[in-house]
Image (cartoon, rainbow, N blue to C red; front, side, top):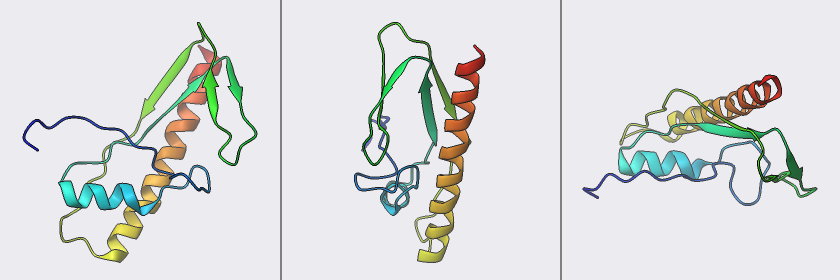
Length: 108
């Protein structure tokens, strides 16, 4: 729409595997023409659940770090192979952002 709002989604989807991007984020970017800005976060004090995705909940008054990677653009006429390559790159960038946030939080 014309307002150009920002939105965020969890790119690894509800069924896993954890930290592996699904095609939905890539398809959404293709349809809207908006970039994917990969990002992740870490908390110095947190609860980690034993679920399939190891959900993290930051504890009150914890230090949090957010890390972002360069945007990914998907052409409106991207082929399935091109979209799969972008999905794999999105997975790499999300994991890299998570690792950077984790390291920064540990040393802050």
